[in-house]
Image (cartoon, rainbow, N blue to C red):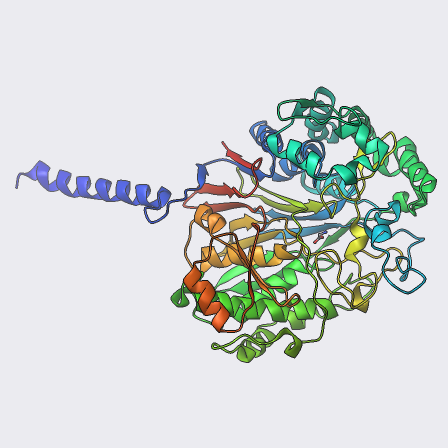
Length: 573
Ligand code: GLY
């Protein structure tokens, strides 16, 4: 061998090896689903216009919080079913340089006039209409206070800058998508019941908007301008607060100007746990999401899930059993920690997880009544919305917010363009009687003035070796927690890329009803038979969730916006 060959051959081999490794790092040859790749920043939301807004903010030099707050305001315009100013939610912010995660609790609060039995009729039964579709179903909204508090603490941009895109979308309008046109027909009776709502979402009493028509919302633009000019006070004090309170008092609602002025965001420590060496960071109570996600992961860590295989009978059975224990505990022990001593440490402990894992038979399903008593009920729900953002400094936002039902209670407060939430229905109106998601609640979640209703929203961030690894979250009512469980397990146990982890078929069990729900056609007949023979009542249901997941791996961002909802988009730069 000549001397130059002695140098060049090994050099060539090293280069070829590096190129191959690089190709493998960005390309998963074992998967038919591929994430979006980008380097600097990424935004994933349930609406393409909001994703565009978030990306523009990142490209203009905004950080993850600037982008998330701009997305939050924009979704209130373009995704009226769940994006909101009149609702509430949770934000997790992970500051990468400080390695610190902060939880923002801007869940709605019960107004001062609310009380424990406010939804019970003369016979002591829950008046469902009052609890869900009346002005009295609304809690004091927290979204504006929550978004602006996070911006004040961690953003680089001004309120005017982050609200401007939403004002533009409301004032100039945006094209109605096929999905929004469909929803406006589907929820017609709820939305036309309020003439103020009908005026916004329908061209006339008998006609509909079609896909491609432009939806302009001038009252909403006015409300957004109040916030842009006066910040938090633009919503909670002054003319806008006056209009909300006036609409409430004209319609037997409970929210007064005093309730709005007193609304408080809570800045909290997140709930944390570990799963096979990864750090799980999620939302603490009043969300039940983080606690029960960690509880289920602790139970499942006791089983060799990877060897048992993805969506096999054995794995689904074990997951369903873990889910039953978690939802049974949820009904008893969860509520607003300012009013009830939630046993967070006990429920999220490895010891309790192990104890519950030992109760799970590998052979057969445990009857729900042997776990704890309850009454069956079920209601589908696809409400709520989640968005995830990672910026160029690897700061992470995981944010879920909601009006509760799609379009909340369907009522727009006169002259504001703002849809009101029906989050009061997430309290237990009568302990032991299921809410709209079929979830049972106890005294821990009974109604009290100033209290926040229990939630299932589970914005989550996972760290690996102390660094942000992935961020995820989803809507889906009671299915939120189990959907996030599956995204986490698909990535950590089953070594799926984010796209594959997102596309994979989902299952759900919530203790009561005593059914194991599976998505559409995603679980094979063979597996369904195995599950049936183990004693599970398998029911096929429509798809679950709309996850927005972004992973950081080998310096690249890899994201996937759930294909289960047609308007969802991810974008990066
Ligand atoms: N309203 C749905 C939830 O908070 O979980």
